[in-house]
Length: 396
Ligand code: COA
Image (cartoon, rainbow, N blue to C red; front, side):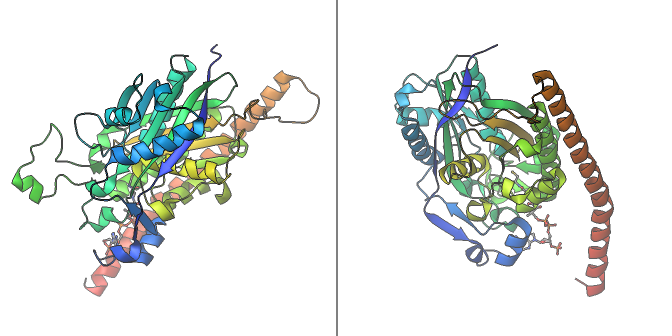
């Protein structure tokens, strides 16, 4: 068994100054603040300056994380930059970041896993640290989605924003860090969220440019369906695999895509709202930057403390999904062990009780998911039918 553990020793975030509100969007396309807030929970998002790139935003977030960790770029062994909006197709943006941080001994990789990219990166960083191969790994999630969005398409332009978040994952001898993980991919749904015209599968002809093939296209309802399923399934899996129930988790940091997706997952998991970190109202969906931005705000505001157990859960283009339970170590010792009872009973008995508690919680949550699925299977066709009838009657 390894004596190395992963510890988040630094974190930092950056969002551009320019705020784009729903009201402003309503002057650009046929939408309204009310529609966007009701359907997504988003009120505003940040937009990078024209000459500001993903690497530029990553550098600021990374420098803040390094400073907090009390190290410099020269101490880094590895840089993992998750983004779907790199500065260039080639070279990797992670190398631009490595150069600007003077991280001369660090390897650098750009990780493309859609909005799940940061969670993929964090889990990957823990593997390098826990095996003892790396002392300090920088994980960044950064996006300039305003570049990829078609500003005439109200289906996507209401959702996305720009920003960057970073953490330093360092080696520690105190137990904690990554407790369990899920990494998933369903490439059969690749076309649900796609930029069709950039890459070796396409040629950017004038016709393709005219069709806006270089911009993001999304089948919102398919992504919504995938998201609600994987959010619940992967939280159930990582929490159970860590030998915990949802009641042992201090904060869930979900990918900030849509408040309705988060609400549905919350109801299915039987979780109170105060256990959910939500900041999408201010930043929208910043893809790979979404979880680190929420994590940084949770740490900065004291919403999570050393010793707390977090769940991070993401989904995105691919379609991909990723989740983990992460324990934030204190300076001195690990978080409090889970005590099932205060009675003076043996560790084996405690462990058995905890296993039963986990099994009972999982069964309850799975039953709630089955009821929710059955209700949706009846209600969605009913609402679609009712909408069709209303449209026919109104002659629209
Ligand atoms: N403003 C106003 N009306 C809009 C609109 C907008 N921005 N976008 C769509 N509409 C209209 C539609 O035309 C439709 O009108 P109709 O009833 O007359 O046909 C109606 O609103 C409902 O559209 P629908 O697409 O069914 O809305 P929805 O409830 O599914 O919400 C999304 C759309 C995109 C917000 C939602 O599907 C979603 O969030 N999906 C997940 C997307 C996601 O998370 N992507 C990122 C993954 S990392």
